[in-house]
Length: 264
Ligand code: B12
Image: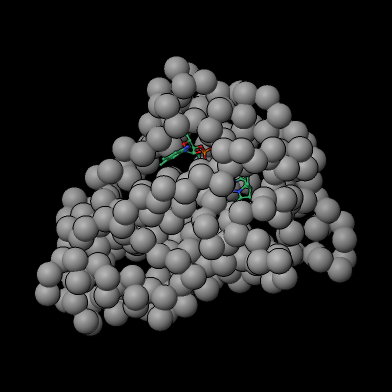
């Protein structure tokens, strides 16, 4: 079967297996994406979203090498709508129900690729430091959307209210077309004003500092340090509130304020 038909069949199968959106990017291109360039220059970070591992240190990170035979990367998105908040509730080591669904979708889709196309696939970890990738960059390169003023992936269908997962495939498949989509251009950015810790208030990164034109939140105005303070507070609140114990409801204000892809 031609690579073009294989790609189309994989994307259709992704939807059949429960993905809200899916796209394909070239592994070698994703590996040199803006986050891959900038990450090491951003300094220490051991906040939320880093490996839950006692050996993990905050210092510069080696991003593990991916298998050389893996030529294409599939990005799968699952809608996390406002009226299904439980998809996003973090329950300790087991993650979130949404992420478990994404793991399941990727697992059955990989099996489908093997059974139907005879192609080898390679799983990817959630954490970049454990063999994963920067999922937002990969999603942009797989044609799912753009990076918005809130530093999130914004999709035409669901705005930023999606969660992502990826895996790789041995074959060189044609990448999905990058979207010509920018809902932020003339938007007054309610995502920024709504932030309780003003994490997108002032530029904290420059293009020179990070050695890429594509810096966080477009103009460098995203502070992961401030954002992480809010998320650490969410953890503390879940520990002290007996009704939600062991279910962390991380802040999603910048997602919900975004008007892109809103249903109503
Ligand atoms: C570590 C992490 C965090 C940390 C640090 C975040 C950070 N940005 O540094 C903390 C804990 C603070 C955090 C917060 C949140 N996170 Co988080 N996080 C991650 C994780 C594990 C790695 C991200 C990372 O380290 N990025 C590092 C730096 C280098 O990148 P960056 O700040 O994103 O900036 C780069 C991009 O903007 C990119 N870029 C900018 N413009 C352009 C243009 C193009 C064309 C391209 C290709 C790239 C590009 O270049 C920048 C570097 O120069 C990912 C999962 C993954 N494996 O990717 C989830 C992830 C990014 N998080 C996610 C979410 C949802 C959140 C929160 C809403 C919390 C929540 N309720 O889950 C907030 C959102 C904050 C915000 N406004 O961005 C989702 C994003 C979904 C989406 N629609 O975008 C992800 C993908 C996880 C998932 N389950 O799907 N997160």
